[in-house]
Amino acid sequence: MRKRFKGENSSGNEVVSIPKVVAKNVAVQKNLDSFFKVVSKVEAWKKLPSSAPKDLVKIYCWNVNGIRSIVEKAEFANFMRKEDPDILCFNETKIDDAALSKTNIRKEFEAFPFQYWNCSKPPKRGYSGCAVLSKVKPVAVNYDLGVKKHDREGRTITVEYEKFILVTVYVPNAGLMLKRHQYRTMEWDIDFRGYVERTERERNKPVIICGDLNCAHKDMDICKSLSQKQQAGLTPEERTGFGKLLESGYVDTFRQLYPRAVKYSFWNTKTKAKVTNEGWRIDYFLISSKAFSTVLDSEILCHYDGSDHCPIKLSVDIKNMPVYARQEQKEEQKNIKCESQVEDKIKGDAKTNKEANKKLEAISNKELQLLIEDLISCDKKRISPLYNPFSTIYFYANTCLLYTSDAADE
Image 1: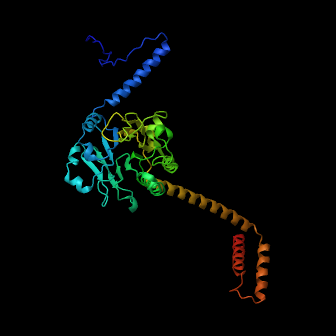
Image 2: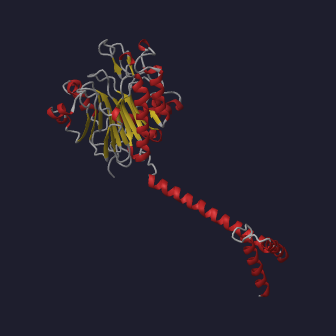
Image 3: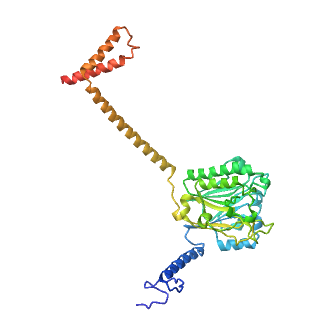
């Protein structure tokens, strides 16, 4: 028998050591052991290489405040090297189609074979814009909301994968002096909410929404020193609109996982607000409530610089992503239900008719004869059979009488 080496169990497998903390109480020691096991699992996930199973997907979103500017920064290169995203979404790319074609921006992201860019259309050049870069080939891609008044600024891209749908969005800011407040709250918010609800319903897959949603939903999502109710991103109407989006079936992943955490994703660079951490949390990952159980973590990576926003990250286990019933299956189930109801109705009608026939057979010949005599008396009064309302009854009653009479003879 081979001698067992230190650090091996009886099967010859390596034993992972768990830190031991001296504790007099046995129960306390067990709790500490459990704690370190959990920590070990978390650390193992964070250290997964790019060759990790693709059931575990890392999605990042970053408002870069200009793609041409950020790719030149060492901090961005550091981010790309350390994080190694599977899917990377950008907001506020500030580049138009012409400039995108002339520059080498796409080549900067050669690690992502599937790239989708939605730029602002003329006359607004170098404004707004978003992008989705993916290492996994999607099933389908859609640009904008399909509403003309919203589709000039390149604010949304919808990428459908095998098990989920990803919508990256850069929501319009209500602007200085709230110039676009009515457009934002009364038009954009309503149409965007309708779009994602319709997309989830028609495609029958969970939806992940990510991006700069330009709203600090709760008071804890903004530094107290900056909290003024009548400014863009903080008005009651904007917060109500955000709340309605959640109520329509989506979960704010970070807040759900960390209900008391105070972290921000945006800081005003003009006032150097990041130094004092006077910021806003306006960048979000939302997910269909049915799929929230697949979320492993939702993070705000505020240690990265390079923009007035920091990147955010969502880790999901797509292996356990819920499967929705397809529309055809729903229709089939509906048809089966209708057929069942029709069968029940037919059976009920047959039973009713059978009972009616029994009652009719129970009528005595004498009663039928009296009915016929009454009808004949009507005829004697020269009421035309064509207009006689009793003619049908007469025929039916006489037939029944003959039928009973023939039955009796047999």
